[in-house]
Length: 172
Image 1: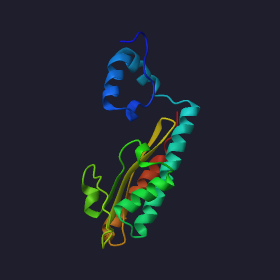
Image 2: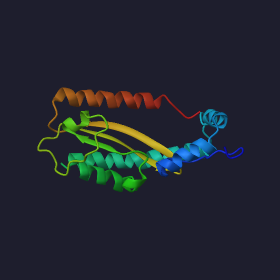
Image 3: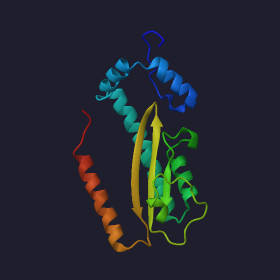
Image 4: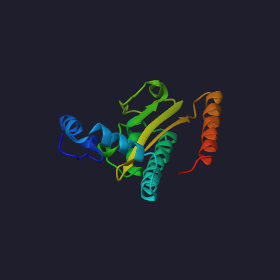
């Protein structure tokens, strides 16, 4: 331990060996526990950072959906997401998941096919954005033009339910 010090920040970008050393030396359990409790409540600054991370991520999700509608493949959808959310792939808070059709059903799928499928049944986008250390984490499913009607209706109903739930929450 290095005195009464703790590392506060996003150490996830550091090398694994550096992360382990910092955690062992500079993150005493009692300090980390208190900090975790403090994180339950956000300051206006933190709320603003979270809003901005989500605003940028939403722009990326909208671009991904538009690329899907435009018959793009997974890699092009990923690139559209990154461009619209204004980030490099090395800066995402976690590896984005962009899955078309059967790839959307593979847990943690990350291969990004280069070619667009002939038929577009579904798109899964699990992608986020970091802003000043605060992260957005958004997952969305979209029904494609070739999807069975019942699937499109299910996805639409789930989006409506999500919107209803979001209207019922607020910071605080």
